Length: 120
Image (cartoon, rainbow, N blue to C red; front, side, top):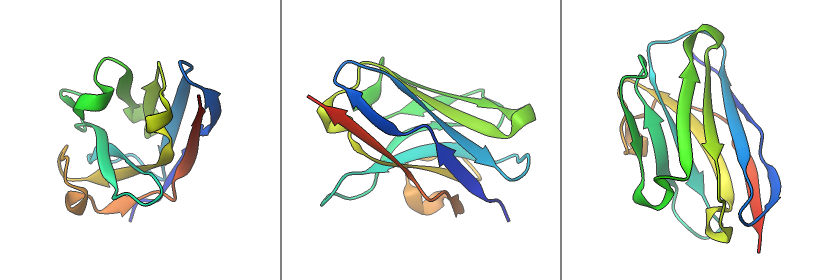
């Protein structure tokens, strides 16, 4: 079992930045992903990183603005979000799974989510 705890969400103006963190209860060899869900919308993939950080994946809408990284020694994954837009507002979830997938069903463990609000 792996427990995941997200932090770093909050209110930011459009164009601003936030860094989300996701701390795992133990070091893992899992790939880690970030997903988000806005009110009335389905949960969508944002970014993922393989366990060795050899590969990263992003949804098109965040490429060039968001960066996923992980510190394996700290069992923590980060999502640096720059140039935030109102459409980025959502609850952001981190997840752990066997591979860096864009499919939420391929992740085994989930955090409780952290709210990101972007004012225009």
